[in-house]
Every structure is written in structure tokens, then in C-alpha cells.
Image (cartoon, rainbow, N blue to C red; front, side, top):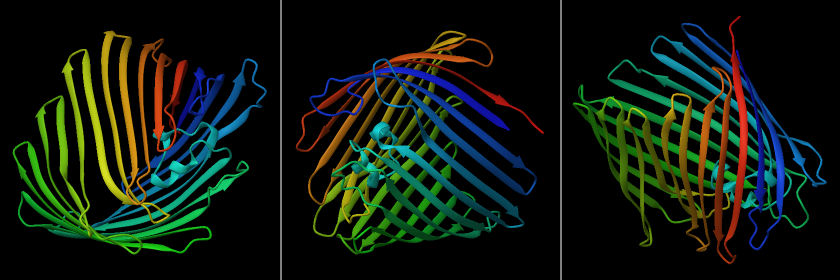
Length: 385
């Protein structure tokens, strides 16, 4: 059993990131989390509940509000030669506090600069067979939905549903060479619009050597509302020390009609010195949105931590997000930078003080900037019964 409690007080200029706005607010957010888990030799069950109490301070006339409420239930069963998994979740967010870096997928981008509530719910089932054999296969099915409540006047946000199914296969060609393949199907439908379908296939080959893995992948996508796509990537994962690893996949997505986009992924983490470490995560991919648009999304995070004392750490973080709608040419670009000091007050309580800036540029709009200064304190209690 685990119970989490944290309190954050922040002063924010232009909290809604609207161009030309210079308003400010002081906000208190109390985050609560509770997790109950059970594990046996063959079963794992976990339930997590969360909620946040937001209280505007100062001269604000807004009322306190319960936000970011949700529940996640996961189950895993290990049988001889097979593993079964199930996951169910639901989460409600106030759109007024939704940021680009909090978005779950490309469909959520239109929720920015809106008022109301967004409710995400999903259900996923999966099975893996033959994990300890030269040949194995798996299957998964899932469904999700997004519902909007209490929207402001003039909002164009609409509810939508999506379903997906995937069939995978794995072939161990040798002790160091593996071939994997998958077939997928997904569909989505916005309220009042026609249903959109996408078929997909993927083939990947990997080779292990010493401390490295070399791989290549070929993927196909056949959307019924846009051009067919082929994606080819090559990649490598290398453990170059006991404290460092780099993993990347680079290649291109080629659309029927001549459009080519560079895509890839990079993960890097390294303990540079006994007192410092660095981490980098970059992803760039092409995907289909629920309205039929083809989206190129680039997302990156860079971080550096330095231990000033055994109890205090200085952290630098840089975040970047770009979403380009390849169907109509619209673009959203946002970056954020922050500096924080983390101080371990006791073995249980952690104090964080920091400041940051966020900038957003959308097609047809001026650049909007927001600054934040904050402090937070929190801890977690764990126990068994």
C-alpha cells in the first residue's frame, strides 16, 4: 500500500498561454495519490486512485475545485507458457490547467485554450504465448473514448471513440537473431463524423552482439482517409558503461504521393560524474488523428542533475514539442525551460523550489509566453498488510 501527498504553491503569469495576455494568478494545488497492489507467484493486481485540490489564492474570485481525478486498474496473470494482461483507466482533467506537455495524443491538442472538463477512459486486454520458446505470438484489443463536459460558449471540441486490435509474432532465428512482425487495425470516430479506419503491418529484425543490439524495421500504414505510408528505420542500443546507455532508431516515412518525413527516436542517459547525470529523450513520428488529419509530431526532453550536497540537487530541464498538421499545414510549437533545487528535508519529506518559462507559437497567432515560480513539498507512506 502506498499513499502520496504533495503541496505545490505557484505564481504564474499568463497561465492560459494566450498571446498578448499579462494576467497572473497564485494557485495552491494539493495532490493526493493512493495505490494498492498485490503480487503472488502468478498474479499481479494494482489499483491507483488520484485527485488534486486546486485553490486560487490572492484576489482571485474563482472557487476551489477538485481536478485531475482518476483511477487505474491493472492485472497480470502468468500461466505456463502464457501471460495475460488487462488495464482499465479513467481520468478527468480541467481544460483550464491542461498544458501541451500533458497531452496524451495528437487528438488532445485542440483542448488547449478551452474551458470545461475532459474525461478520458480506456480498456485494454492482451495475451503473450510462447515467451520461453523459439516461436511466440501475442494479441491485444482495446477501446478508448474522450468526453467533454461543461464546455465554454463557442467551443468546437467534440467527443470521440477509438478501438484497436493487434496480432504479433516472434521468431528466434538463432540465439542472437530475432524476427518480429505485427498486424494492426484501428478505427476512430468523432461525434457527427464518419468512421476512420487504418490498417498496419510491421516487420523488424534484431541482432545481438556483445553489449549492443542492432535492428531494422519496416512498417506499412493504410489509412482510408489519407495517403498510404511506408516507414523504414535502423537502430542500435549500446550499454557503453555501467552507468550509461544510448538507444536510437532513425529513418524516414514515405507517403504515397511523394511526401517524405524524417522520423526517429533517441534515448540517452549517463552518470557523467559521481555527482551529476544527464538524460535525453527525443521522439519524432507520423500518425493519424481522429479527424483524418496526418500529424508529424516531435517531442523532446533534455535534463541535467547535479548533486550540490548529499541532500540537495540542482536540476535543469528543457522540453520541446512541435505538432505539424501535414494535411492543412497548420503548426504548433512549444518549448519550456526550468531550473529547480530539490532538498531532502528528512528521510521522508522532499522540498522543491523552482522557476520556469514556457513559450507557444501557433499558426496565425502571435507567440505567447508564461513564467512560473513555485515551491512544493511532499512525501509518500508505504506499508504492507
